[in-house]
Length: 263
View 1 (cartoon, rainbow, N blue to C red):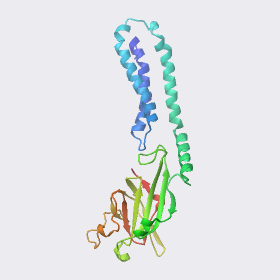
View 2: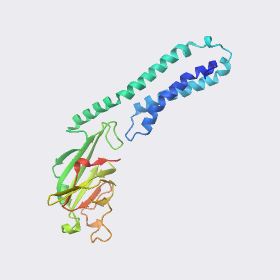
View 3: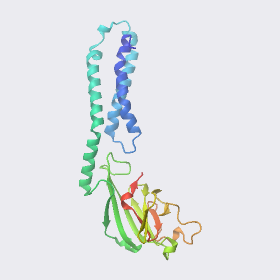
View 4: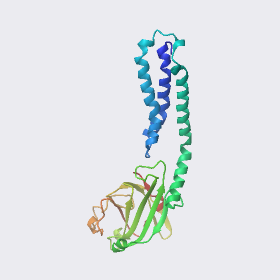
């Protein structure tokens, strides 16, 4: 394949380009936040390979007549060494990612006092504003992730506060005697609820909701239903733009451990 001097010289730029594709594809398809040093490591061999290849092509006219034994020391010695160093660095980074992630998650847990990395549930004291809306419970659901997703802090920490309060419904038949108000770092959540009456329990399928949504707790459908006698204006106080409100009755409750940030 490499049967001329300048084609032989191109094998090293091509090797660099090949080494850079796997990390680049991994970063582009990642659903978590990618840090600047990750981009630098992934793009370095690609940029070097492109610049190097252009230099080889431009100098091909001047080197075509040169025999292979007269190629420069840069191509024969430094190029293999540089390629080996970059390749080894990429391999070490690739294999070391799980270890780095575990260390970062552990540091996040220790800094924020979490007992577990995912869905650390804590009951919090009610605030004055909570009591004014008829709240009877405030729960915090916190997580540590690495690499940090876009919705998390720089150390991977994210938190969701859930305030459960009295709903606009007068009785259980309205299916609106309670509301759960979700506030926190995430624009979209995956929520799950469970029902329980007279010892008969059932975990309902999870559903996704975004900030500003007012839905029911059974299937995540918009609330109120078209045949209901209540309206969103009956929720007091009216939800803010950054809130997610789930309307339910006392026979259904949120599964806090199943709460998950989507974005």
